[in-house]
Amino acid sequence: MTGKTRVICFANNKGGSGKSTTCSNVGYGLTQLGRKVLLIDGDMQLNLSLSLFDEDTVLGFAQGEKNLYEGIRRQDDLKDYIVHTGYENLDLIPSSTLMSSIEYELFTKWQREYILKKGLKSILESGAYDYVLIDAPPTLGGWVVNILCASDEIIIPVEASPWGLFGLGNMFEFLEQVKEIAPDLKLGGIVITKVDTRKNYFKQTLETLRELDDVRVFDTYIRVDSGVEWSQDNNAPVMAYRKSSRSAKEYMELTKEIDAAGAVS
Ligand SMILES: Nc1ncnc2c1ncn2[C@@H]1O[C@H](COP(=O)(O)OP(=O)(O)OP(=O)(O)O)[C@@H](O)[C@H]1O
Ligand SMILES: [Mg+2]
Image 1 (cartoon, rainbow, N blue to C red):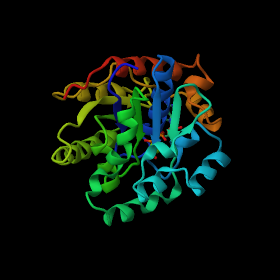
Image 2: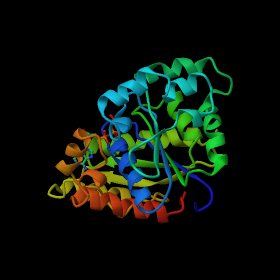
Image 3: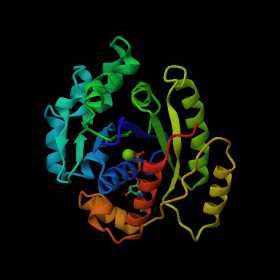
Image 4: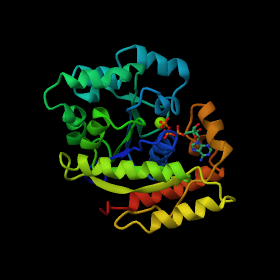
């Protein structure tokens, strides 16, 4: 243990920008640095859960009671929803397809923005983890507000594409609003994903992002690599499935940057 648990969410309204892949690999990477990590799958697509368990197991969690939706709906202590993965020091709170109705569940609750934060309280107080990493869905509703209110930092994975950059503008506006109710929330940084270095557009994206004031862009970017898809097909983080692959090495570098970083803005 290194002191206070850092709670980091991976969020971006833009779909397919690499949130789940980054959350899973940074989570696994941190365990390789000797950290204890709890992953939380906040998305009904179950992608983070599927990056650690096979489909039958994930559907079992989703249809049973051991999932985030049940924990939030009942406003329980979320420590009772933790499952151990096959990897040392890596635990998960799985998701459920019923997360599609989470907005409705929240709507009826008192102080609805803070339900996730309250559910995590005893886990954080126990000091059992160095990191809690939350995978957010590609939406900007009340549930993502919950995720942001429960987090110390947000990391935004951005795909190097024109619409990827456009979406980032929306994301910044949303964050400004959320900061009114989560004033301590920091922007941990932007990570550029799914990069095809042969395309000039990537270089322009990088320049545009590096010009932004007070926004950290991680030095490491993640290139397109078929190893990512193979690892997902095999329900494993690429760093565990193909340790020598390009993306595994890049994710390890990114993990070290994140571990070393304090939030900057
Ligand atoms: N470095 C990479 N190389 C190749 N494919 C990648 C890479 N990173 C992600 N992908 C693929 O891109 C797709 C989107 O990635 P991912 O699911 O991580 O994004 P997401 O932001 O979580 O998506 P969503 O918004 O739907 O939750 C997936 O099919 C994944 O396999
Ligand atoms: Mg995802």
